[in-house]
Amino acid sequence: MNVTKTNLPGVLQIEPKVFGDERGFFIETYSAERYLKSGVGEIFVQDNHSRSAQSVLRGLHYQLNNPQGKLVRVVRGSVFDVAVDVRLGSPTFGKAAWTILSDQNHYQFYIPPGFAHGFCVISEFADFEYKCTDYYHPEDEGSVLWNDSSLEIPWPVVNPHLSEKDASALPLSEIPKEKLPVYEDN
Image (cartoon, rainbow, N blue to C red):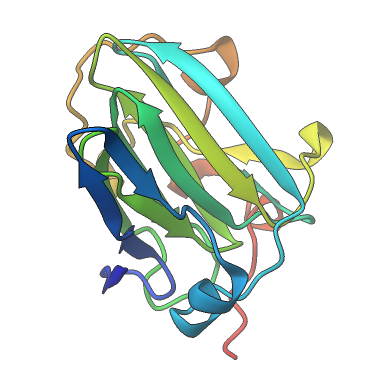
């Protein structure tokens, strides 16, 4: 597998080795030992699968007291996937990294705990799967406005389909400081 570091510390684009021939392909999508050597050492406790239609945008979400690291991939279709550093005091606070994930490139994106995450479907629909390092706690979730201009994210849509929660999220600069995770220099 090929691992590419992004402009955000700990956020990784992972290109798994694909074995294919005229019959189809095989991919090992996760191996704890191999991923640990590549910088992804967290234990995953929950797997999720969502299906979304074209132009659906989900995010940008994070959990404050129970932060989730996520290893994400697309098994059908394609998405524009984004990570944003929302950790107060981080040298990269407010910076974003993004990639295209698809059933053609088989890329994965690792987003560490403390980062906000979101994606937009750019195909007719997409099946999106992700592993999480903590359980989902809806009462602990925070959201950053998807089109916050300070984040400089080049979203591939202008008028995405949003949930009510995502449409009413605040720009990062307007989120109360006590509602953001704090950077811890390890």
